[in-house]
Length: 184
Image (cartoon, rainbow, N blue to C red):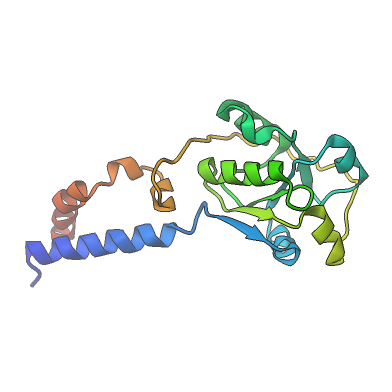
């Protein structure tokens, strides 16, 4: 038979496992063109922060063009632009620009702070994409708007990105979970 202290330890271990499993959501990663190609094939969204002229000359398939200063915009404006472009910030997003473009890196870092999905940065940019033999397109992406809710995550771990994480404290777990386990 389980005692209350052992049930508390089990509850704490279970909570830690659940939180560590969700820590992979919302992470930011620099990726290669081949990795970006795979992510795109798996449904990732692409945002391109090159100039409108460069974008018009060719971009990754299904890419949405965002202004080069997007990373510096207020959070509400960033959410509006993503929504208008049909980009769902709860899913994987690939940020692309020219090779090593500071604006692309800045947007990658900003999205990593506010988006709940994985955020990838194609470090080699459109140039690496082409060098690896992947085609560019001039076709416009037409996605319906997607409502956004972006918020800064203050915790150093991405685990706190779970909905309702503010109410899931160890005190609540220790107080409520043993009672729930005992009643089941």
